[in-house]
Image 1 (cartoon, rainbow, N blue to C red):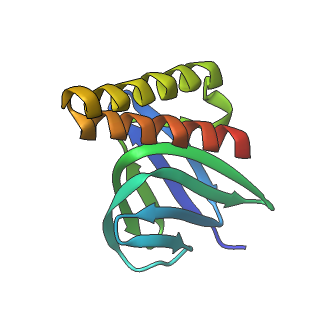
Image 2 (cartoon, rainbow, N blue to C red):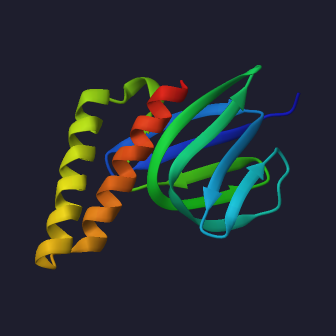
Amino acid sequence: MKTIKVNVVTPDGPVYESEVEMVSTKAKSGELGILPGHIPLVAPLEIGSVRLKKGGSTELVAVSGGFLEVRPDQVTILAQAAENAADIDVDRALRAKERAEQRLQQAQQEHLDFKRAELALQRAINRLAVSEKR
């Protein structure tokens, strides 16, 4: 079966590099499925998971938004933060989720930065969901 090279990169360095059969992720415009030979594309990503199908199994990477660049022979994901499912510290993600939920309650009461707290909550929930699916 044909494969396509995938790189997931953050400011701290590479998170994932491999040849895969298919990449699935959620862009701002909707769900994307990328196979080898896909037309060139650049798209902003939502906070979510990148599903990488390889040899009959699926690997997951949690991304906190970013950009996806597709070329016929390579997919590059540039993310502010990304973690392989196996590398997610579930306890840390749960604490982050709890802190974000508390901030959201405070934000409603004190008119603090609601959007920032909401994004923190989305990132924590995404990390927990990805870690559970592995």
